[in-house]
Length: 124
Image 1 (cartoon, rainbow, N blue to C red):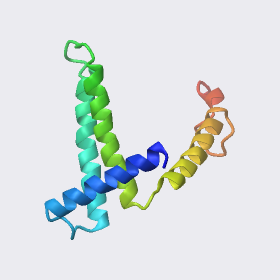
Image 2 (image 1 turned 90 degrees about the horizontal axis):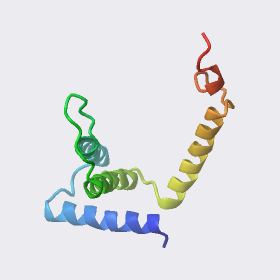
Image 3 (image 1 turned 180 degrees about the vertical axis):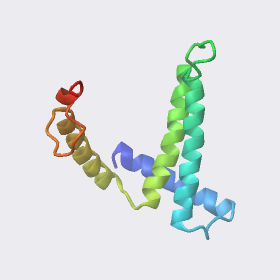
Image 4 (image 1 turned 60 degrees about the vertical axis):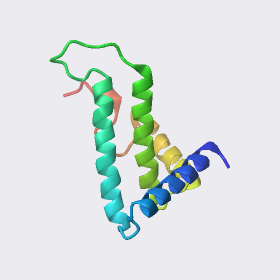
């Protein structure tokens, strides 16, 4: 079992425990997706508080440990969404690599979609 498979497995265990202990077994998958998305948005907002996004306030020193903890909180909900969508480690890896290659091609001006070629950035 690789590390991503392990993370998905322990996240599934945590989700199952929460559902059982809190009586949430009857919630449908799409409602879980909504709940996980809202929870992730909440964690993203907490992460923003760690990176001085408030330009109207004096910046504070970045707490690296707190930032990393928020990122891991976000990962928890992302993994839960992947599990709910039926996305396993192998498929996630494959889709990610395909999308990454597409994004690299776009940045190299090799995309059929308009608006991605950096060489056209300053042309009018």
